[in-house]
Image (tube, rainbow, N blue to C red; front, top):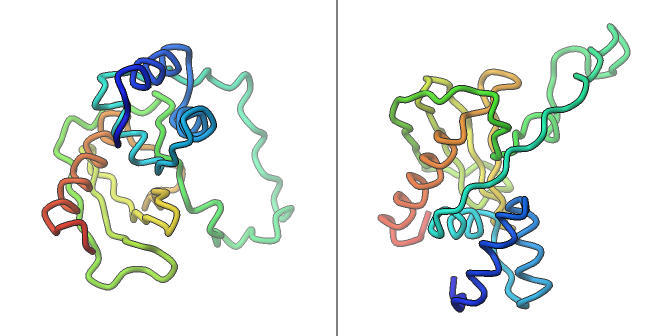
Length: 169
């Protein structure tokens, strides 16, 4: 990512002002006419040693689903419910262990790349990189969200593996 020092300073200001990775990604395109993937922007924020603001806790937890009210009450999950956003809300404790990442030899349909990740706390998830460069997780444990530390370690490890393979999957 080629940014001038002024542009890097602007990104730092946005993050300090509470901007999310998505917000920075949108502003880079709107203000500097530079389109970057979510992952590239996430790495930029990390490279600039910036810390994203924690999301405020929801005022009230959502009500539990009523029995039989959901036509998918058989436990099946569709693609929307299966994917977990990679930004942590800070509620999950850090695993403290090593994060390990593998890339599938046969990529999942519809993905540019896919594989498995084991987080420091032992929880596992499938990961997917779509054609737009968006990274998503499908955790083995429903509702699991990795710690921010584990997310950062996962992204660094994935980038390292991709670079070792010459950027090819």
